[in-house]
Length: 178
Length: 198
Image 1: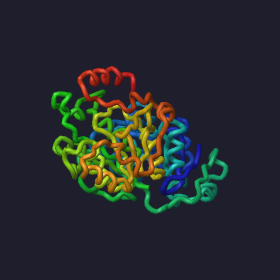
Image 2: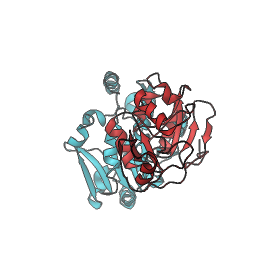
Image 3: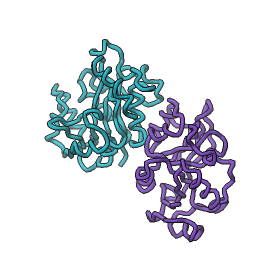
Image 4: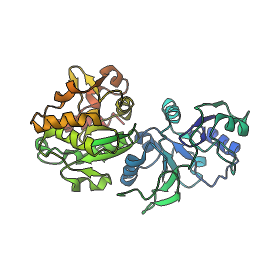
């Protein structure tokens, strides 16, 4: 279990395809298990390894990745049920933060990225903030200095037509021309 | 530094019998979709330079027409760079089915270190897998107006940073990563390769 900086807040990284690691996230955050986890990938190819990427999703990736647009896609069977929360979907994005992206690249597989705070509390923007929440409960913090905070990623469900905004965040919708 | 991915789709596909090669299906996706997929996670946004935007509406991406039609690939590079929202246009052709995101990233990550950032394979500069900065625009335009369409013709006027072949080869055989599908023979070769590469 590793805490790491993204372009908004510090997140909690676990290998998204490893059910044991994913379970630790829920235990740590006390997170309600009805919501799918947000997961970082480093490429469309990696996204396609865990989810069905439609043409409309591809167009949104081309316009908004790397960046703060999380796309909810239909998950392949290799994705643990804890990640999809039984919904058969998961939220994917490519982070524009070099540490976050480097972490995914180094692991070579998708990484969970929920904010590093207990459910219901403020997401941290510093490594110290993460320590204050989870001092001895995580293995490592990648300290990338303070993150920008602000709005979390926009979450858009593209498994339905038309796509549905689940959370309005840093990327403003609708996107011109889509 | 903001980088726009520019896909050049202005060619006439003469050697494929006029069939738009970007739209040929390969491994479950048409070639231009494979190009978009390789760029999407690396560049900040993507646009397509084409004289036939109706062919590409299904991609849901912005398109621009050539500023100087019939001025070859250099004209296309100019048009994409001029229209790019980014400071840099990472430019590829629409018929390169085996682009690799990490090879794209090699170039994009160094954008800004030179006005042109470009891989070299042997004696060949990969002009259709290169990052062109806005500072190139006046030099390219001068060449276009003079009817001099060789892409590398303006390189002596700008700062050029080369990416060595060995860096590319860490991710994919350069002959494959930069391959394009111009002829039915090349398409056959691509079909054989697609099964091996994901």
